[in-house]
Length: 390
Ligand SMILES: Cc1cc2nc3c(=O)[nH]c(=O)nc-3n(C[C@H](O)[C@H](O)[C@H](O)COP(=O)(O)OP(=O)(O)OC[C@H]3O[C@@H](n4cnc5c(N)ncnc54)[C@H](O)[C@@H]3O)c2cc1C
Image (cartoon, rainbow, N blue to C red; front, side, top):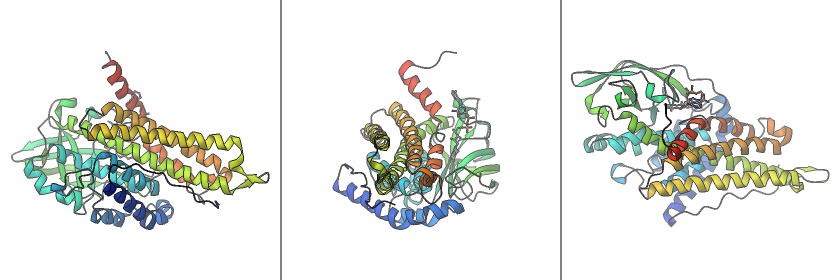
């Protein structure tokens, strides 16, 4: 092992308050998250108590309005908090990002009455959220979803199956996209569904390659009745709401990816300076030095890219293209950096005695969720060259 602790990243945060916030998060991560991460991931245990602690510490609603229980933090700060949490354990960092995604619809498109009624509990009342867009037959082509919501008096009745739902079966509320009208993107509406709604059931969670502590499950809606007061936005506005949530969510995934990559680099640096071969630390050999240099460069480039997109968002400027670029670049960077970290550790990197194999398995999912990296390229190309002709 290393005889020299690797330096953690120096952050440039906009205010003293935000520096203290990130320091608080790092402290919570080091005390409450990192020490149990490996064991609980192996056991597939979801750390609900960590989310309760984060909620009590005001960390589950950071980018939202304090009038509704949020933290009033710019995205630039919120994302760096996600990065710290993900470096400690992706199940937590990604979980916070998904929770935030689930709050986006109501915070951005709900009525004042809905926001006053529901947001405080969602943002700082200990509730955990989930976001339900994907279905068994509609992933990348999300606008082809078939889960139906049918109007019945003052209620809507939801029937269908959602797939791959992070926090599926354990969430307190679900932001659900369902078809209320014509085929395609214009026939979709968003709803806020309570976790204990009659007719709502979850399948056994998927057996995944990584992030085993984060439950991912199908959700079955068997005539789930929700009042019209739980419809978010206008009828037919749901897909636009979903896409707007994903623009912000993708920045969250980018930050999670950089957290995972930074954790892998720290491990690799610590190991390379301590491990000796041929009578010298392996960090002396140019073959490894260049690899470490490339890993660090990818991480810093990714961080700069997601922060640039976040600052555009914070300034109220369009950031969709930059968010797609940040998601694409940062998650590809995390994949490469974690693979390289395993290489730096040699045979030990391939064992569960060190965290890099887990980080490598975790990085993979980030290239898939919230729009695969092929879909990010489509989004970027549309911004550059306009829509594809058919
Ligand atoms: C761990 C995990 C957690 C998730 N959490 C959630 C969640 O909380 N909520 C939610 O709604 N969803 C969630 N998802 C679903 C995720 O968003 C989808 O898996 C993703 O959008 C891809 O959809 P798919 O898996 O159906 O793949 P498909 O859409 O079937 O794609 C398969 C392959 O084809 C490629 N492809 C598809 N269309 C094109 C195209 N036009 N051009 C080029 N390539 C293309 C894709 O990039 C991919 O490589 C989660 C998934 C995982 C694995």
